[in-house]
Length: 446
Image 1 (cartoon, rainbow, N blue to C red):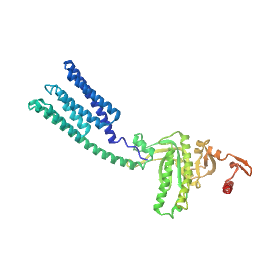
Image 2: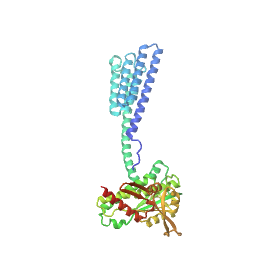
Image 3: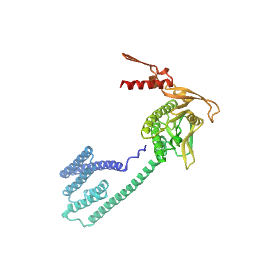
Image 4: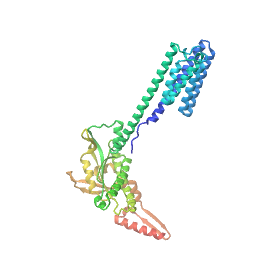
């Protein structure tokens, strides 16, 4: 599961150019309307009408862009209208420098910025040719004012081109660095639990040695007789099989909101309640529901592995315990590990070693938290290493509603057919015998 990378440069840049085009268009529209008002005050109806017409044309172009979202054609139309407005106004002005030349400094800047240095520079050259054509007498003015204006125009275009060149080079370098950093981030994120990774990326977690006391539910699981089961399997096949097992189990852990602590050989260690918690009871329920689903998924995987030639499919055993522990970053400033320590961690590990194949054992504290939702049976009282007093362990059977459904009596009678079944009264051996009889009877019906 990879973290989402921030908005891409291409998308961000395109969005910024969209906004820039809209702002520049509105500035041009307002400027043309102000010029129209100035001409009206001077009783110059034709220039005023021309200014208003070009303002309306730019507004229409802006509305079309808002509707179709085609940026480049909208920019090109807007720049073309700018050039046309200069040509139109210049034919009515006896001297271009009475306000008309201002556009020649705005348009090349806008074209190079909005269209890039290559296409924008072509537009800048086009404006320069327009300037030559609309100069009085169709000849460029070579007086001091004209020379100063042409030099200023060249400086503006050169500045805009250089700025855009440096900006594009910087963005290219930044994009490459960002892609490299994103790749490194994705690689490093695979070594962290998703919840811890999310906390670091959001800034809620800090990369320093710090711990806290919290009430958690701990989970341990390993594969029964893993060494003997895999000693006849090639190392490559064994690695692929183990990784497939870890992948399936990790999906279930994350789906239920657990935090994967570590993988130790064929063992999985996880805990619930940190860095995110739904409450002590809900965390414990989520952990036990997860264990039940993992057991069910292992049954499905065994069927698949048998079909692929694995003669001794994996069986897992699990242990859970709830209680207070110290959780956080342990280690040094150079190397940290986010984990939890405490007596309940050890108890969960011990319960896992006591469990039989496909069995889930939970501590009494966990049982009290899930009682009423999970059907459990007392497995016995055990003395475990590291704990000075005997502990009660409970075997998880299934979700309570599923157990009740499974144990509901079944009675059905037809002519030639009578079935009376009370699962709750059957021992394990009796259940197996009844299952065999039902399968044989079903086969005879076919």
